[in-house]
Image (cartoon, rainbow, N blue to C red):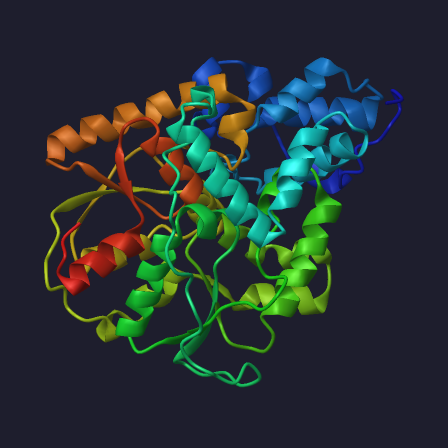
Length: 401
């Protein structure tokens, strides 16, 4: 790349950082390494050097950007409201366009996510290879299912052109449906118990594009976003049980920059927010669960800015236990754990230490996480991690955990 190549970032957004340092305690890579360059303000300074001072985009610059988890924990802590997530996504878009990040094999793998039948077949094949011990452990994958059971089906006709309080779209996604389909069934079971009917997306609604955006493949993410919007027409709410997918869908207005996309994003809710506002419609649990530790996925806590819904829903069936770590990132970061395994592991060690300490003090052994990436990353570390919807469904039906 030519040394005078711009990152094409918004100069006002880039200049909004005053380098106060309040973001540092909330940055997982800074906490793991203590390196200023691997902090939000360090990365922003590097962006400024390229965009404003014609600094070259060398291997060191690429490393600074690639090692960011994109947890966005810095954003709520920033008194200046620096949109760090947008700056990082814009930078990665330039790097990917110039071929500096997102190698061909990563692009090929992400391309598979939009073809659901191929994804399901590939996931089954990967599960077989796991049983044969042919999958490298450094990938940090949990044990994948050989059989995933029936897919969730629409339960009510609904009129997508008319708003109803009892009918919603349920976005099932790609990896979530391939690896955690049982959680989809639990979610549908909880919604049915509340008297809510669901529709699942039509063709094209199988991948939200979150991982593509993280990788800098913005064009691919936009194509997927347009397909997702078209797959769930009308005005009914769109419920999502994956924090990362929900954050991506809620950002479609910015990603596409159209009124249609902004209107769609306004319809998107995390499923726990929907249930929390209607707890009077959720049956009392047949079995009440014990203490459950709550792990806040970054894209629910920092991006969707929802700290209460999961706790309110779990409190209906159990005793939620806070980790009191200000939402410390677990290091999953979508595909981050596979792309940066060493640093991801160091970040996870800090999270696991907190969980083990709190668990021992409160007599809790189960962790609730509302994001598949976090759940799989922490499960690979030996923790017992469940999706909140799985716990709620089990308590309501009386089958325990």
